[in-house]
Length: 231
Image (cartoon, rainbow, N blue to C red):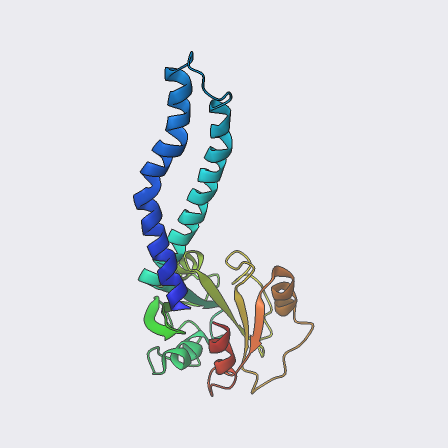
């Protein structure tokens, strides 16, 4: 919940504030005692006790850094990129998710040339959704730049939504194989026009890679609610 995220951020700030005191009291004091008072009747092995505490400190630092990265997402927005081949239905899905005709949709492949962004509220969290150009081998210099930007946005997103046209005879993985990782989402779009083929190489690859599969119709909005709930 948003309350838990706020608590994590507060805990991180408190950790930053108290960290110098923690190091000085628990680590430096032990080392200084053994160095400065070698002839005093002190408990043996003071310096040896520093090792476990340093390991514990490293663990706390790593956990705090991970929390800081999540806090950055809460503050600046979670970046989600729609990716896929041209004419797969990315812009139609983008419009469904933002609730307005924000992206131009035409039957012509390659209509989207640049990255189009919209800010959403998903479960109380700020989400920056990006519609990107269809990924393919392009020759037109404008489309080449669009594909380059699409790949850059996908690689720098927190989550990628791979949109697949279930009607397409082109089942190449070229638009996805170098961009997607486990935990991303695979969308089978245009289910109003055709039944998804269970032997489709794209969906088989998605399953083995660890992608969540969702089937919908971006034109009508059928199944989009399931995607929103998953997000």
